[in-house]
Image (cartoon, rainbow, N blue to C red):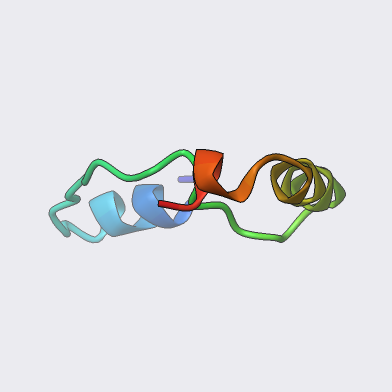
Length: 51
């Protein structure tokens, strides 16, 4: 069996997976595209995305 994500591994191990609503503004800076998104967010009005 090929495991291609952490959640797939957890399900394969019999763990129960939970999902929670979160903000689309909660990003991780792990890829080049993420840095571009972060720069765009910084360029906007702070009150628009930082609440």
